[in-house]
Each structure stands twice: as structure tokens, then as C-alpha cells.
Image (cartoon, rainbow, N blue to C red):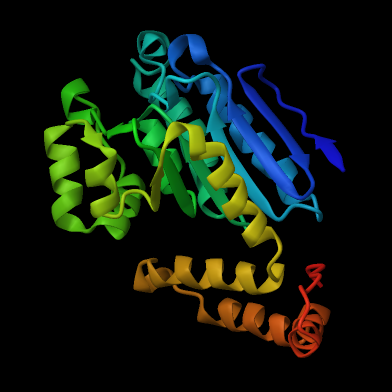
Length: 268
């Protein structure tokens, strides 16, 4: 079954097919650099996808062969980010999209090839699994542009690679190759460009075949673990865990195990 997700921008494409959601950054002429219009569209796409019960996994990818997302569209900065009022509006669009992505209830995979820079890397770090082609490159060039880098984005980076590597990445603004990115935990897996689609689909289908309520509760629990202690919500995690044990999927999982067959989970 294919579901088309409406997008307010032709630079953002989205669909759901066989339980897999696809979001494509469709600005290849600018290496998929994110405009304000694209940030706004991403938030609206994610909001729509949250309502689709058939959805199991979302995959983010960039159009063309040069980039996942090469960062923010710097050509907009003079028009959209020069005054305080403009900067506030832009940051609101950026924050809304990133927050929706970070809190998305289903697993999200970044399929990375080419440049994954600045806001593009911030996007990827707010997904659950990052699979990259071996010719990808990563950087956060804020220090070269004189940009402030927000607390939430720094916290996410630090929670993934640790404070020492986070400082190195941000202070140096240098490009990082996939071997180092894998070693420091910036990405989960490196494959050849020819293997990328196959490996991403293998990972997505494997996740989609597992119990959705279990995966949802695990994702929520991991998010709580990396939250500030003052923002913790253990009661909600316990509610999600209890829902797993009370679900039909739990019964199906037990039956399938005893019958030595593949379980068929329905998320209920």
C-alpha cells in the first residue's frame, strides 16, 4: 500500500509504502541545502506521518548523488537571518522540525551519501540509525561562519560522541571521513555507495518486522536516558512498557516462538 504525504514544498518529497516512510530532501542543485521553506515543510510532513498507523520506519535521504544535506542554505542568510526578528523566525522553523524529528515515535534511519554538513548533520543526529556510504563527509562549520550553535544541538552531538569529540568537531569545523565518523560513534554503519540502498532497506525491513510497541517503548526509554534529569518522565516509560506486555503483539510473539515461525506484529 502506498500513501502520498502532501508537502508544501517541491523541495521536500514524502511517501509511505509498505510500512516504510520516505522523506527526500529534494534540492540537488544546492546539494540539498535546507531553506526555511524546507524546514517548515519537514515539520508538516512529520506531523502527517505521525498519524499513519501503517507506518513502521522512516528513512531520510537526499536527492542526487552529492549530498544527504549540505547544511543550511547560506544564500538565504542575508534575507532571512540578518535581523533578530528574522533570526527568531528562522530558528523557530529549525527548532520545530528538529524537535518533531527527535521526538518522532517510530524509528528513523538516515541514508547518507556525500556531504552531511551543519544542519544536515544535526538532522542525522536526531535520527535513530545513521548508515553512510564510504565516500560521505561530515562537518559542523559554525565556527567558520561565526554562527552560534544552540544548546539542544550541542547536547545531542555530545550525547552521541562524548564531550571531547564534540569539542573537536565544533572547534575545528573540519571535515570528517567515514572511518573516523564510525570510530567515534557519529554513524552506525559504513557501506559502499552501491550497497547503500540495499543495506538501508535490510535494516528498515528488519525493524519493521519486529514488535512496534516494544520498539516504541525502547526508543522512548533511550531518549529519557539522555535527557536532563530535570526533564525525566519515568512514569511514561513504564506505561509504554506495560502496554507491550498487555498487547496482542506480545501474545503473537510468544505463539510464534513456540510454533517456530516468523511473528506477524500489528502494533496493538
